[in-house]
Image 1: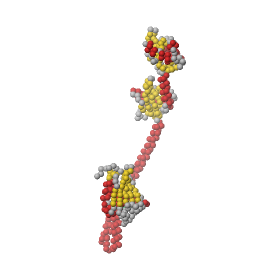
Image 2 (image 1 turned 90 degrees about the vertical axis):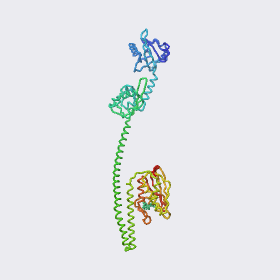
Image 3 (image 1 turned 135 degrees about the horizontal axis):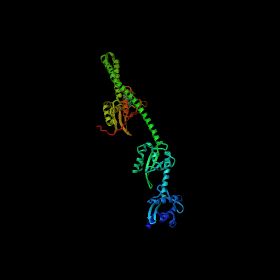
Image 4 (image 1 turned 30 degrees about the vertical axis):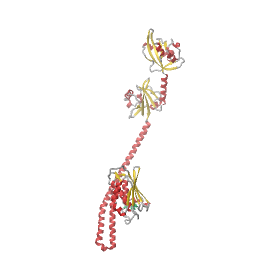
Length: 499
Ligand code: ADP
C-alpha cells in the first residue's frame, strides 16, 4: 500500500485530524520542492499561500465534521505554494481514512497550471476574435464574452458574465429559447443557428439587432459549453433592403414600359388591320373599275379601231398596258401587306428544297433568258416555307431579269457562323450604283422603265419584310456594270424531317 502511494504519479499527502502531515510521496516532494523531512509533522497550511491559510484551517475543521470523498473548493480557484514561494493552481481530491487515531484525510493534488494556461490562451484568442464571441454552459449561463460581444449587445466589459444568455434574446423568442438550447445540448454539432429564420439579438437598452450566429459545442474539464460567434448583419440587411427597393422600382418601370409597349403594339396592330383592310378594299374595289377601264379600252379598239386610226390604236394600247401594270401593282401590294398577317409557325426547312421550288416557279423566265442558275451546299434553316420560297424566287428572278448583254449566270451559296446562316445570291448582271443600294428595298422603288425592265418595284420590299419577320437582315453588294450579290441571314436549324 505504501509503495503504491509512494510511486503514484499524483502528489498524495495524508494529514491527521490536527492537520499535521503524516505521509507524503515523491511526487509531492517534486511538486512543492520540499524534502520529505521538511514537511513531515508540519501543518498542511505550509503548502497553502499565506492569504488563504486562515480560511483553510476553518475548512479543514468543517470537513472533519462530515468527511466524505469529494473535490475541494468546487467553483473556487485553489493555489499551492512551493518552498521557493512560487504559487501554482491546483485541484484537490479529498478522501477520509479511518484510523485507530481518528479520521485522517488523504489528499490528491494535481497541478493544473497547463490547463489554466491553455484556458488563458483560449480566452485571449476569443478576446482578439474580430467578431462577438459568447460561451455559455449547459444551463445557459454566460461563462465568457469578449469585448466585441459587449459592444454588440451594449454591455460594459465583464457585465454579461454570469447572466443567463436569455437576456440577449428578444422578448418575442425568449420563451422558446431554453427548449432550443436543451435540444442543442442533446445533440450538439457545429452549425448555423436558426437556419431559414431571421435572428435578432437584444441589446441592454432593449433595442434589437439582426444577427447571424454560428454555434460550436465545446467539452472541457469543467463541463459542456456552447461557443457562439455572432455577426451583426444590420449593414447587410440595409443593403438588401436598398436592393429590394431598387428592384421594386425597376420592376415598376419595366411594367410601365411593358404596358406602354403593349399600348403601342395594340395601336400598331389596329393600324395593321386598317392597312390590310385598306389593301383588301384596294384590291377589290380598285380592280373592278380598273378591269372596266381596260375592258372599255379594248372594246373601243375593237369597234372603233379603224375610225381612230393608228395613233388612236397606240393610245388605246397604252391605256390597256397602264391598266394591266396598275393591276399587277395592286396585286403585289396586297401580297406585301399580307406578309406579317400570315402567321404560320416556323419549321426546319431545307434551303435546297426552297431553291428547287423557286427554280420550278421561274422555269419559263430562265428558259427565255437562257440563264444558268446553280447552287452550292445549302443548309437547313428555321422559317416559313412559303415566305422563304417567295424570297428565293424574287432574288433569283431579279438576278435573271437584270442582265446585260451576257447570258445570266446566277449562283446561290451559304455560309454558317455562330448559329446563323448567310445566304448569297450572286449574278453577273447590270449591277446597282452605290447610291441606290439602300433605296431599292423600299416599296415601288425602281431604277428602270417598264420598257427596259418590267416590274412593280415591290419584290425587294417583300424580301426585306420576309427576312425581318425571320429575325434576319438583307443587303446588297454591287457596283454598276459588274453584277450584284444579295446577302440575307436566317437562323440555322438542325436537319429536319422534310422529304
Ligand atoms: P422590280 O424588280 O419589280 O422592279 P424589286 O423591288 O425586285 O422590283 O427591285 C427594285 C429595283 O432594284 C429594280 O427595279 C432594279 O433596279 C434593282 N434590282 C433588283 N435586283 C437587281 C439585280 N439583281 N441586279 C440589278 N438591279 C437589281
